Image (cartoon, rainbow, N blue to C red):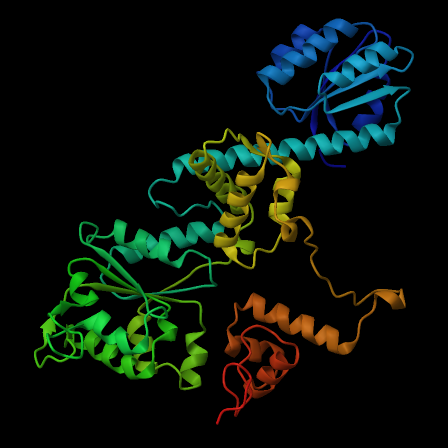
Length: 470
């Protein structure tokens, strides 16, 4: 059996602790044993252990002092006290120390093993949290981008290389993955960092005004145009123009945007004069532009003009322990803003954060932590402070091999869950989903509508609200 954890054992002289040592070794624990409390305490500064097991039979009062000193000098290190059952006062005193576990002699080996396993898991999570905290301090070059997972390290490398270029960049990824933050990082790392960063959400500007917003307009170009206005392309000169939600741009304006990118000039609305601009173009979308191109809803030539460098942001649930790193950063920011002294996140809450699927990605995590900070009465975030959806989340599974008929589901349910799973894995890319599922696009859309899967297009002949067009 492999190493299940490293323990420091403080024996007492009538074998209360030493009697369990052979069994712990047999069950895979590594032991470092001491007869003297002082020697054991000095060892804690020299070795990295997962828990301390102390017998209090003959050295009760000094053992309790030892435990309190460990709590004080080695915060978070689990101390498990073994206490003779015939000394109720000592049992009560041990319980009040805040020990990770208090076990009465004779010890149930299964209970001891379970307690030690929990202590080892507790220390593993604390070490991971400390590693992430150090990473927060070290993560300065990429501004607000946090993460040490392999997928994020690959992203940093791509962003750094892309920042050295002036080529257009297309940022894709689910809502809430931080596309604008990556765009700002690209700008700050580039030779244009001294220039402006100008961003616009193309979906938030009415179609009738978007052309004027981007290209500007001449005086008298339309009712209310009482003066010449410089558009965002010119405002971003020597810097970056960030076109967010580019997939929402109307086709009529896509043609003009394509010409501007090709010619590096724009024509203000109502003007007959071309004006050159010098801005780098970054665009972002959570839509599947390849599918939109295939359906005629996005220009293919514009897609390739924008997609010179493609940066695809990973969903939060693929980033592993980055979730805790981000949570810690959001906690510190929210606590400082609210004037609260909150030291961290307890193990149980951390496990819930790691288990949850985060459909809203980084934005949803930030919201959850801000809520926890605002509502908690404690100095540490606990499960009770987290939103109900996080506390109550249970991953869904398809039980193919179940023996109990009650656990089996209909073929339609299996199909629905699998389609949802495939679409999640391919991040909504319909072309890739149809390849994996073996459906044509029409069949995929029909099944998405049947199962009410997000992203399903309306039926032919219906508008976006599901009502028949007139």
